[in-house]
Amino acid sequence: MDEIIDQNLEYIIHEIIDDAIFINVVSNRETVICPYCDTPSSKVHSHYERSLQDLPIQGLKVRVILNNKKMFCNNPGCNHTTFAESFDFLNFKATKTKRLENKIIKISMNVSSLTATDLLSKKAPYFLAKLPLKSKISY
Ligand SMILES: [Zn+2]
Image 1 (tube, protein in one colour):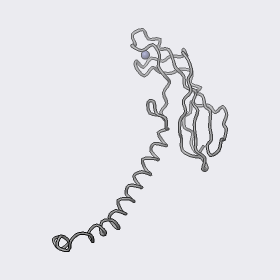
Image 2 (cartoon, helix red, strand yellow):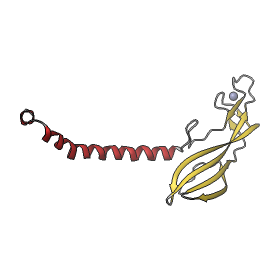
Image 3 (cartoon, protein in one colour):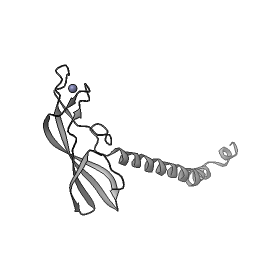
Image 4 (cartoon, rainbow, N blue to C red):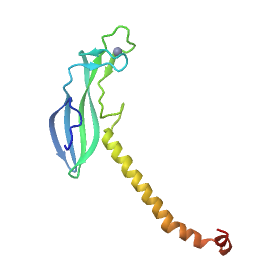
């Protein structure tokens, strides 16, 4: 990977299947902060697997298989008994990494400006040519 996605993630194993690379990672963070009350917790409730799309590597689609922790919140004053570990590179409940989402937005913005250019240079004059002569003159 050209940049480390998160300092707390540990690489376990990877596998290439067809045109995709599956990278299994686990968080090595011992203490996780409850997002609801900001209290640190180190008591793991359970683990669950998340499949995340990331930026492609050398033409391969990238799937990050994240072993996500679910933690207990020890704070009796908190209205949540458990919470999931969250990461800076991911939006809440996202299935794509933030950097992939940003790339998609960038590409789609380029595509729409190309489409706009195309519409203005080709389709618009064609459309104008179809108009009756009088409406062309009135411009
Ligand atoms: Zn809490």
